[in-house]
Length: 268
Ligand SMILES: NC(=O)c1ccc[n+]([C@@H]2O[C@H](COP(=O)([O-])OP(=O)(O)OC[C@H]3O[C@@H](n4cnc5c(N)ncnc54)[C@H](OP(=O)(O)O)[C@@H]3O)[C@@H](O)[C@H]2O)c1
Image (cartoon, rainbow, N blue to C red):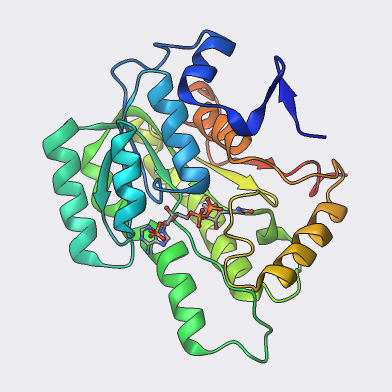
């Protein structure tokens, strides 16, 4: 049974649907936001929601085709690899030139790999930490001078940062490190009025989960994940986007926190 809101399946939401449903058009008029990994999946949904509510949004990613599609939707797409210092520097330059300052930063770019402890290579370990943890760390460090007073930073972590999931050891550790950074950054940026929070998705239907598996194994894995969720379904990227945008702009008395969007998976 697809999840519906006002008779519309959530998966079919577009920016204009969001406007029609909640009358939030203009809610973020004039706001300037950056979404890393905003060319696909959860990041793209965050960017679309922000744009639908009036914000100007820069999205990043590495794949040209996805960036072009994002740009056709009116998002400002920048090819930028979160693991490359030169790319982070030029991204900061682009942000400064386009917006001057930022009101919201979504550190969302991430990769995963399902591999057992025994089979994990140094290359897999380094690739996951380079994007999910080190990439987020040095991106925010480089953007610090551009954060407007009162701005919001939101990190995309994961429910697995507090679970012991089979074959997800490195990924889970990379997100646990990120969760820890959210706390420290929240403390260190307090004097500037910048809030730092994390949104922690459970299994969300974006394709990332099954990316490295053959189709049959992917179906089996997704069915297994669905069965473990108390709500008995995968989440949608739009549901994570709503929580992330709430943390960035509306959660004005919240910092250092992590909000689970997981169908009850870590609570019930
Ligand atoms: N889907 C889930 O079930 C789930 C659950 C918990 C947490 N998360 C987290 O949510 C975030 C988004 O995941 P998703 O499901 O939306 O995945 P996705 O659809 O694969 O999107 C990932 C995004 O990150 C970008 N990206 C990856 N590596 C990058 C790099 N080195 N530099 C810049 N951009 C990079 C990708 O673009 P390119 O590949 O073109 O670079 C893409 O735009 C990730 O941090 C993920 O760990 C997802």
